[in-house]
Length: 165
Image (tube, rainbow, N blue to C red; front, top):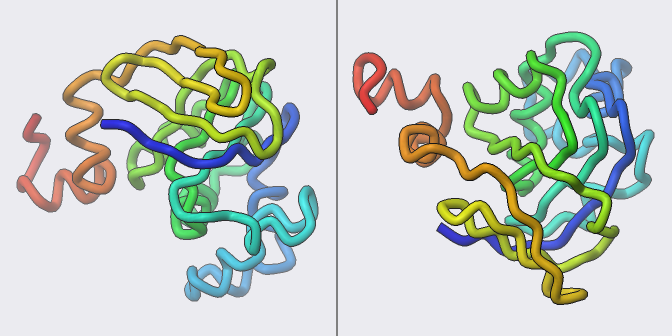
């Protein structure tokens, strides 16, 4: 499974409050409208620059703060296929898996805004088509890939009537 897209780069400690600004809390039952405000206080007009399949690239502790399941949901709805970060807040990481957004822990120092990336999930390799460099990461297990292919743990359980791997 290979994924191709462009990098949208952020720094350390991006919180769920920055992913979904609190002033839009009233839109939590209208996810398509909520997704239009993805990280708008961190990067103006981000939602209009995302193409389906693109990647969020971040530093340490991505998704810190309060546990908002809507955060990975609207990232995915906006067209982001993978979040690459040096580390994740554990609750965000778990919510991402549950909802079908792939979080990959990897050193993101060599990745820049706008880089064209190709991610080979089974091989655990990111090829940066913008500069020719490659970065290795621990690939997801076949079981994890199956869960993500089903749309996340919640969808996987609904589909199989339990955890079927």
